[in-house]
Image (cartoon, rainbow, N blue to C red; front, side, top):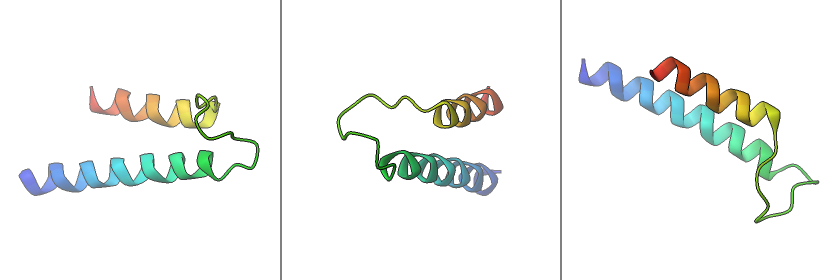
Length: 52
């Protein structure tokens, strides 16, 4: 059971990291600005819905 939870958590953090990296690599993003990406917001929201 604990291994399964660890695998799920690792996958979630990998998806979050990939989405965050996509936002940071956007040439129109200014470092320090608030993230205003619908794709990023939708991904995080869907992750939270799956957890709850």
